[in-house]
Image: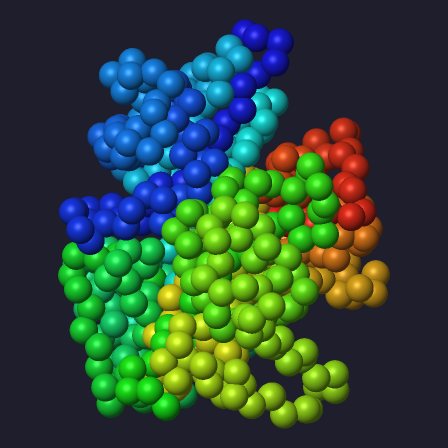
Length: 255
Length: 255
């Protein structure tokens, strides 16, 4: 134990997870130089995925040389959520040992900001409980970029995560979200596994009312990113296909 | 009219609005170089505030020289929301004339991402209606940084804006948000005018239950930024003061 703990830095990742080559955005397009410099200094990491973290740090190293060789960094993966709803939550305090010993510690997920629509919140909560300062570094968030580019209500919005996979439950949830949106004037944001993008879009077009607005932001913060925002009756007249291998954010606002 | 319209770029601003000198973050700590390069190219802007836009562009110019002198840029302010609830919304299409003529156009607010907890969404919606591509550029968002650093639920959250100013209505709204949070397991995010930070914090500590979690992120993405996250009974035991001249984000999650 050190008298002064290190800081837990929440380090944003790019949004081009799974996108290779020319379609990946240059790192300097999506992450501030100061964030790259901070990441290059960190020798202790907790990661959603160690392999993708090493891949990002290689890209960082090409712009800001890492303070220690990649193979000497400590990268520990977050425990995966236990299947079985009643499993006790994992004890995350051991992951904070470097910070308690006085070293700065990075938390990073596979894409975007850790602990937002991603694992990591429990570790952040454990850090606060242990008196470890927490600093979130600025970077891209597909949710916020999708909301901003939607033109829908950005003064009141909710992120509701994934919809049910089973068609009946999913359709009922869509109608419930539309009713909530109408009652509160609140934009509803959701995400889906890319290979289900087309099915979710079809369900939204089938279930929502014609004057409800729907925006889809796809592959945001990459060179092929686009956002379409229109009333449902406009979507029905002129459908837009969605790729099955690119992340998308869906936003709806009842008319 | 050009055959090919320009793009409407949503350009993030820093979060150090109103913070002077050494307490402002270096631009390269909060904005990607690619965003600075894009901003430096834009000759046509729609802004929440022309003066603060010019101040930011001066800081950009010190890193990436502007393509045209500052005084030659076109910076048009968004119309302020009409007082009087029944006033018709302003016609925003004239603001899009540069994009319809084929020029790229920037939209920028005083802090953070435009059209999120800020004006601009109506312009974005008008752009979609006019067939103008919309691209949101990555940058800091106090809401998302505050949520990430809170350790509260980032898989389900709502941003509810400002609370009522009048104490009775504000307290009722706090209890309503706590009930919603408990029912949905949803983190509730809110903001307040800085000089009311202390009053809002006092009201939250008075109204919320002891096992509800409250996080406050203050002056985020600046050198003096901090986040405290604790149960309400912990806050009551060890209160933290909030500065009256720094923006803060408040997040609560019922226990």
